[in-house]
Image 1 (cartoon, rainbow, N blue to C red):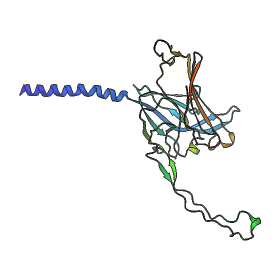
Image 2: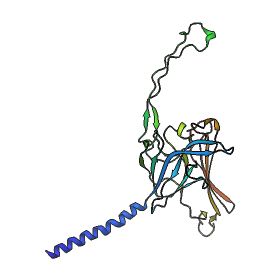
Image 3: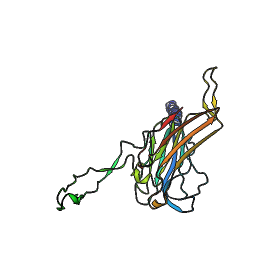
Length: 284
């Protein structure tokens, strides 16, 4: 009996020993960032304050190799600044998004990457009704009914393109092993409104060794090194839209400079159509 009990204990201990390395591998393959969407204020060069919405980094997750930081390190609490999230290549990115906006839902998309519920959990909202259109060119007729048109019923409109996070809630959003590059991060909910309100930032997925843009190839091609690594995101604001946002266009660039050769990746939002995004452009 004693021998049987000892065998059972040894088997259980062996199972635990086998499970622990597996759990460590699972944890290592997923990197987590805490992010909050909420109100903020931007101060323009003339001193006027513009109400904005923006992302802010939460408490760093112990053991995670993904990082989150303000693009403007000088921006204090409540001051608007885009964020930059950096994650190593080959790792799954998990963002815990907290919605601190007053009463509206929000979501996240990384332009050029699949994840966060993009394409699988979209939500819709009813389309507004359209009144009968009457005569608009009075010179052609005196009868207001002449040429009237009854618009057909409209289909529901997309509200969120990805997993929606309700106001006051926190939801975990996952991107499985995102591709290397620099990408625009923005709201996937009413993007023509929440984008101009300031809900955007950037995600850098990198496999580069610090200080080395391109590794050596064999014994004939030396490594291409660089001295500085910086990320930039450009946007513009107008005071005439202080109640609904000012940024009307964004452009992001992540560049490494050194040894006479640059590498950069960029994605941008069209300045005349908020919410319309071009695919990420990568240039060796």
